[in-house]
Image (cartoon, rainbow, N blue to C red; front, side):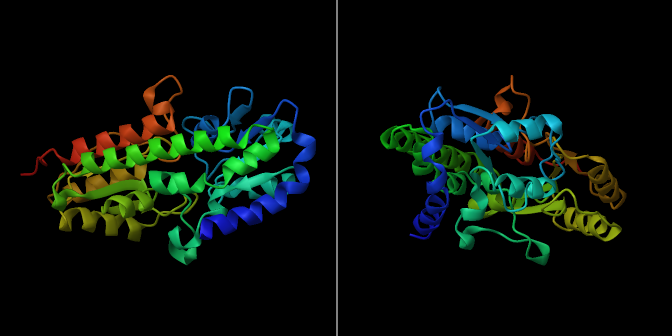
Length: 305
């Protein structure tokens, strides 16, 4: 019911902008490629969907240049994650709201499902829980049909298929992660991108850096993570594709100086996908890759003296 009411508010906001956009070539621009992947599955091939950010781009630090601003100007609809993920382009997004529909899907997600970090900062990484990601797209079918001229039945049918696929991904993830011994279910990464993942699958998660990679890392955070690794005998550390590994290397060295050797897991994809010509270049491929990398690393016995 809460999601439905939020959608009604959004539909009301865009209704006055919809009629002049129908019956023309329609261009949707998203901020992240994960959003673009989902939107493409909701519409058909007549709708152009492009993302501003691609592989290796950190959305917390991204600032649009002239090329990206041109894309935004040419868009009929802009879709962003919100929840301060695109922290350095929020002013730009607000400016475009005065001339075209700009939807921040995280900001219309049910507030009771949003996690918060320090200083009550919302966690924007909602795509790390496939079921929550499906909920985030719930408001889009009627909106897309209204703006693009596509039939309601087509877009809603596509949404149901997307939701079924995300539900299947969630169930598969559960089965894979259950192979990891309970005492080994610690996921330690470069920054706090796995909060929703941990909640969905009942894992302990910890990032060296906070929810945003724009924050600073102090000696206290490094020492706390070293102590966590040693005291819980955590077996593996995971770097992230769009985040520097330098600080995690210092953490690993600190744990080793205390007699606990931590293995490196494969680098995970969190805020950005892999290269577009690889399986990890899509949302579903990225998620499956991460799950396999995590489960394989933590099913391996640590090589400690």
